Image (tube, rainbow, N blue to C red; front, side, top):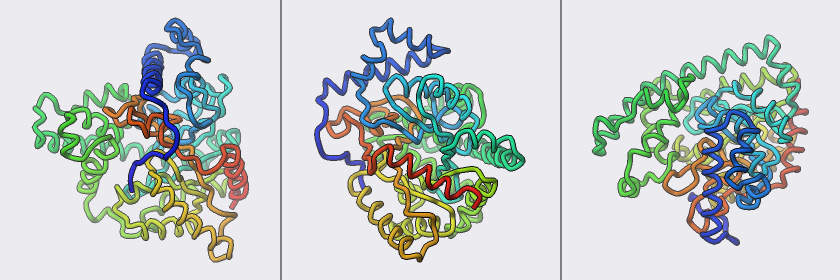
Length: 415
């Protein structure tokens, strides 16, 4: 399975470089500004009114439903994601931080003021590497009402516990990453430090292991990256950070089946629904179940079927930033097989699996091959001809996806 981008027309290099330049100007203006108005005026002084930004950036999709902020391991504060979405012309966004909803209200409020649609969400971790579940709340009002209830308070306490665990894990894995870097010839004064993590997160805890991938990759030369086969933060995660986490937890903490590994996340999703809160659960980036979780494709298919039948999972991400054309074919085949079982009544579910494609999994605004980062609204975006327009591959229309999510969420509420 590869990162090959879709075949078809691509922009020329000059067009791409203009896009990259504007995106970096947006990033710098974001860092300098403390309000939308200050951000807008900063860009206008640089000759970039909104219409010009949208003309140059030319985002290929109308929405992005998988974004991260400084409330987990992203680099952009939650409310400022709304500024980016408005500036480049995204119609709808969803903040899906790892085991955190602390930025949700700020993002929703700012997006509403700017006329950008915002769907509250969270990405729940499990005990199986690479297996994460996105939970969306299409009715924002009901979601915020849920947080005022006893059940909502319990959910927030659960998330706080998960965040405390990941913070401690990050600090311990930092040592393993530094040992790995030392073996690659990185001098002592070039190793990662807690102070660097403090600066990245602005001192706001928790700190996340994914950030070690961004910082660690920056220590490697281009030659080292090529030699090690580590071109981006995701590969650094797979080859360095995830194995370190596994060693840290030990074999006793590794579950041998999907039921055990996902039990806690499944219970939380069920509790949300019993409280009458409308939600839809989508399996995140199945490719990571192969790369991080070391599953065979057959085991991935079995896991998706189990989660659809027993775990309350309603859909799967297909055509996201991690997927090449071959991946899209595989996930669609697996989805079609499971949907045939649902239609035949062999799997109890409110309907066929929802296919979610508008998902970049954005963390840091840094397009270009040297950084290996994913860009909101684009996915992989760099100077290579096949990635100059990004690599997201929508499998449905945006309105079709939103409507399918709303129908499924309504069907699940109270179940």
